[in-house]
Amino acid sequence: MNPARIRCSKMAEEIRNTEVRSTVTATATATATAKSSSLWPSVLRWIPTSTDHIIAAEKRLLSLVKTPYVQEKVDIGSGPPGSKIRWFRSKSNESRFINTVTFDAKEGSPTLVMVHGYGASQGFFFRNFDALAKHFRVIAIDQLGWGGSSRPDFTCKSTEETETWFIDSFEEWRKAKNLSNFILLGHSFGGYVAAKYALKHPEHVQHLILVGPAGVSSDSDPKYETLSRFRATWKGAILNHLWESNFTPMKVVRGLGPWGPNIVRKYTSARFGTYATGDTLTEDESRLLTDYVYHTLAAKGSGELCLKYIFSFGAFARMPLLNSASEWKVPTTFIYGFQDWMNYEAAMEARKQMKVPCEIIRVPQAGHFVFIDNSNGFHSAVLHACRKFLSPDPDSDFDSLPEGLTSA
Image (cartoon, rainbow, N blue to C red):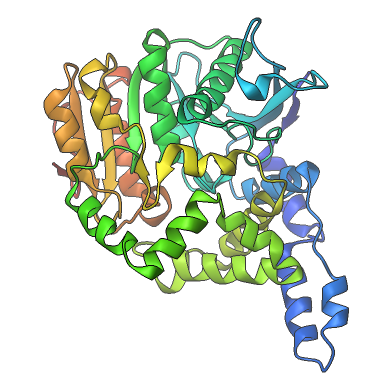
C-alpha cells in the first residue's frame, strides 16, 4: 500500500477548524440529556467507533505535532509460513496490518521505534514526537489488536501463545518495513513486549529502552506477599475472579454505551489534570486525547484480552523479565518516573544478572506516564540513553547525566 503523505504542519489548522464529531461533544450532549426526566434519548446517542474513527481521532490528536509524518497500514500478512500460532490461523486468511506513523528526520538519523503500553496506542506519545524527531527517525506503532491496527479475534490460550502473538506480529512488521539496527523503546506492557522481542531477535536491536516496564518483578517482590494476603480476603477473591475471567477496563467503557465517553473524559481530566504528577494537559490536548482514547478503548476487543495470560492478578508477570535477565544480549536503559507505580528496584535486581551494559534513570515530577508528565525530562533521559548513537556536543560531558535526572 502506498502511504498517504500527511503534512501535519500544513494540516494542523485545517484539522483543528474541522467540526469534530468527537467524544467531548457527545459527552456534553449525553450529560445534558441525562439531566432530563427521561433517560431514553441519551441511550439513542450511542457513540459509534471503528478503525476509521480511530484513525480520524489520531489525525486530530497529531495535529498538535508540527513535524510532518506518514501514516500507513503496514501489511503483515495472515502469518508466517508454517506458523502454529492461533491468531495466524484465520479462517478467512485475511491479511493483518499494523498502524504506523513515521516522522520526517535528517538523513542518517538513527531509527527509534516506539511501542505503547496496555490500554494505550501510539498517539499517547504526541508530546514527544517533535522533540525526538530532531534527533531520530521516529516510528511509532499500534500493536496488533490495539489502536488503529487490525483487531483479530484473540484466541490465544497460554502465556507462550500470547507472547508470540505480539512478538511475531512485530517481527512481521519489521520485515515489511525492512528495518534493522534500530533503537527499540517500549512503555509499560510495551516494554515487556520490547524486552521479549529483543530476547528472541537481538540481532535487530541496537539499544533497548524500557519506560516503566511491566512484568519485571517476580514473586520475590515484597508487594507480591501483600497482594497474596489481599487475594485471600473475600474482596480479593472477587477481584481475582474478575481478572481470571478476563474482565478488562475496556469492557466497562463499551458496556456503558453513551456514558462511556464521559467516563474517559473524567479519567483523562483526573490523571493528566487534577491529579497529574507533572505538567497538566492544555484544554486542546485534553479534548483531543479524550476523543482519541475513547475510540481506541471502545473498539472491538482484541489485544486487550492478553491480560490474564501475561499477568496474574496485581500485574505480576507469569513469566517475569527478571527470570531471563542473564540471557539479555542488548544494552538496556530503564526509565522511571519518580512516582511510577512500577518498581524500579526490580530493574536494579535485573541489572545484577545482566551481562550487557544497563543503566536506570529516574525522572522527577513524573509518574507512570513519564513522557506526558515530564516530557522534557523524558526527552533528556532518552537522549542520554542513546548518546553513543548521536553526535555529542564537544563542549559537553558526554557521559554525565542531564541535570534533574537521577541514576539508580
